[in-house]
Amino acid sequence: MRDEVGIRGKAAAWLGAFIVAALLVTAAGASYISPFPPDEMRLCEGPSGLSLDHPLGMDKHGRDVLSRLIYGSRVSVIVGAGTVALSVVIGFLLGATAGLRGGLWDQLVMRVVDVLLAFPGILLAIALTAITGPSVTNVIIALSARGWVAYARLARGQVLVEREKGYVEAARSIGASTPRIVLAHLLPNVTAPVVVQATFGMAGAILAEASLSFLGLGPQGVPSWGAMLNDGTSFLRTAPHLAIVPGLAIMATVMAFNFLGDALRDRLAGN
Image 1 (cartoon, rainbow, N blue to C red):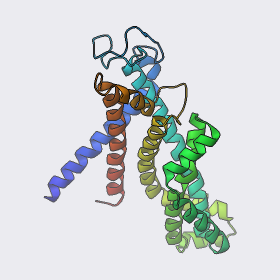
Image 2 (cartoon, helix red, strand yellow):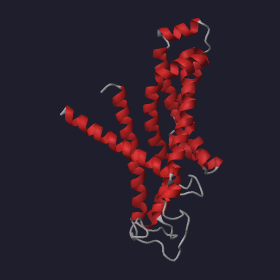
Image 3 (cartoon, rainbow, N blue to C red):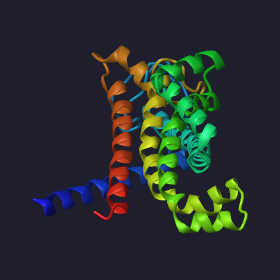
Image 4 (tube, rainbow, N blue to C red):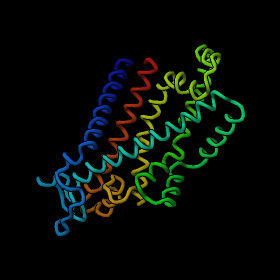
């Protein structure tokens, strides 16, 4: 039974890695892979079903769904990577310094974390994007406004364990500053759990961006899977593929990052 579970876990890991790699390649080469410009309209032809010229059909404006799906992957990757990168930097620095210094700074950071955890992340993101306006940058900032707390708690917990070890005491004894201890000594030793958390964070950020776009609060002027899903809901009876295709893309991407995160967690845990 254990061997069977291991085989399934490896298969899921390889599947996740393949989908993530395909997503990154598609996002990077969207302008070369896309058969049509994503905003090219043929109003007299849409919406339409699947055909040789348009394998995934056309939407209500006569735009090629496959092309928009390809370009939508770029938005998902940019928002996901930007959100995770910003959240990791803020969360790690605040959490690590709080765990290392302790005292009032630790209490202050953790109280801020507790306050932010009291708010549902998606509702906070909706409020911020509604105030600042829908754009790629604003969506990244809105999602990072609460996204950093998970990395802060993780970094703090890891640092509380590591700070009592000999190499930290040795760095302190030679007069190393707190930022130097955090970046030069603690960072390499707490990277593994942060990487695993970041993998799951990519899935969450991509799903959150799709949710915001579905509500009309996502990036404007560029194709987005969430916006495509919203547009497709009006044609569930006549052209269900307009909603099914972007929905499957979101599901497959989130599933792939979760599979990859599970595999990394098991690998780093020695399972």
